[in-house]
Length: 186
Image (cartoon, rainbow, N blue to C red; front, side, top):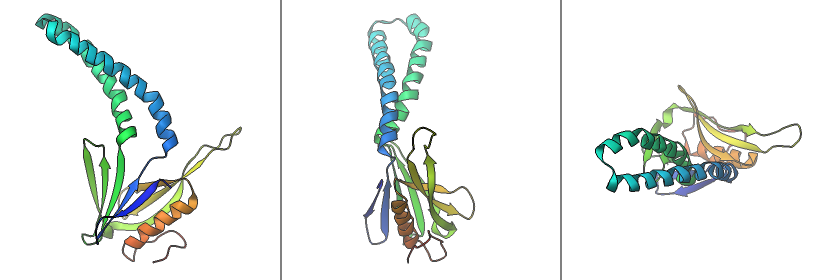
């Protein structure tokens, strides 16, 4: 199970959502070496140029430094997000809203949704890697649908039963008009 529930107060419950570990590790194996490579060359070039370069040399080297910086950030930011990023869903019963928090350890972004706008919570197959030669794995996504706008994916689970349990628990936290997965009890 990739999701973990915690109760922070009488009126607040938190769902911590983690991406599946396998794809995260594979992506890190491919991204992190490039980030380390370009980060090393960025640090080495700055360490060399800061004490010894004249203003004319700085102007000549600036485009190259910007390219190395862009390459470092293009591999470093996704690596940082995969390694340290997390998503939390906070249910505030008293406030009548749901907060979706994207936490990247040095930057946090929060989106607020009104509970009254939610119409459906369901679980579905998110992706399947079935090929002709090898059977793939299925990942089940739990989504919250609103009256207007796109649905948000709040959790990924490896088993259909776990995804239904998460969807049923979310439905139990929401008002009575919200439709949950089949078999969800209030």
